[in-house]
Image (cartoon, rainbow, N blue to C red; front, side, top):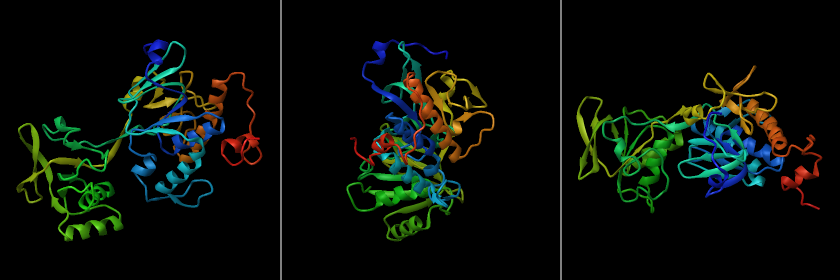
Length: 359
């Protein structure tokens, strides 16, 4: 791995120390927490999104999945909830809205992992990043990016951040309409005005959300405008309004205090490509017996990896997470003699699951 080796003193300064760090909180990442927990290994989880679930939550939260063992049918949302319930006994520590930017080996063999807001020191690293980090699709308008974080937002980080502001929301899916509904309703988070902008008068949300949105629109609490932003105006260094081109090519100015963009997400491999790990067609090559990468202590599970016979299925990711956890247990304790235990009969595993008490 062609990376800088950093000293232990640097590693030990102001970082979270753990035996296992998982990048990605999709189904495979969540099941990795479970399998590590059975091995007695607690994990921290870093996720670029603001909630667990990965593709299941972002792409098909309410669509049925038919190939999960023991579940004839479940939605992406239901699967995420079941996995969270399953890993609850192991008390994983989640770090949302964080993208790992740097991975470096310390002099003592551990891995120093950095995000914009956190630093971790971990003995093992599990990359469960799917097809890459799901990042919001950006609105490309000249001069707009300079307002990111002050008046331009792609995610909602706190319920009150748009309170008493003229809020313009761009989008037409569940997320956009749900935000419009939230900030139009009475409460401490209520915006002074809410306008939803979409290129045409055809919204693509769930029927229940559409019904609530229509009721608030009919009551005058939400304004809907069809059109696309083509420019912006500023006043004393602040974003003042959006210049909109309507479907009939008429210009329109929409005054605003804040702009929330919900145009969906797209996967990007991101910094993973720069960590020096062996790759093949933008995927990490692994040993299919252990799911270890080209670097000792780093494992890759789920859609991010590749090996002969690879299948991109959730159930395959669960299998990979299981073998990776066994391999990690041996890596962390080379003297450990691997004994396959069954949750139906192992008192130790039942203790770890909280089913029975020690002693």
